[in-house]
Image (cartoon, rainbow, N blue to C red; front, side, top):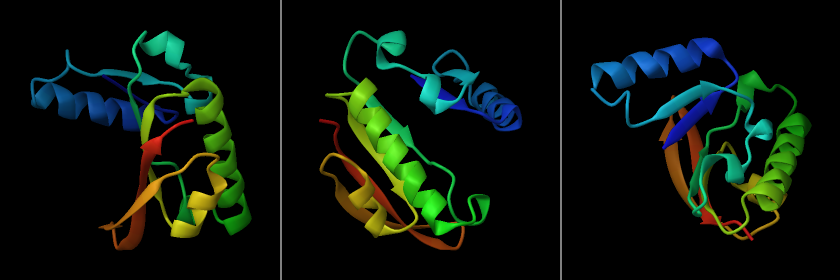
Length: 122
């Protein structure tokens, strides 16, 4: 199992939490941009990719958010075909940005209504 973030502070916080839970050896945590991670570098078997991309105030312009989700979908399809995915969406309409079918589950996080898109990347 692995986790990554481009923000070293977030990575350090996760490492600290994992250490407190005696799980530091269970999750490989590293500072890396998602768009530089390839499935073949992680596992020979198909797995699950879970993403909580930036959105809302972190992104600003809704067009930038949509463009990011198009880029994410394209990257997943190119590099993680056959894997399952779970992606946090701030708006269910963003599911249209993904080039594969997903099911949507509504949720609530940090005062925001969100959706989790799950499916197989094809």
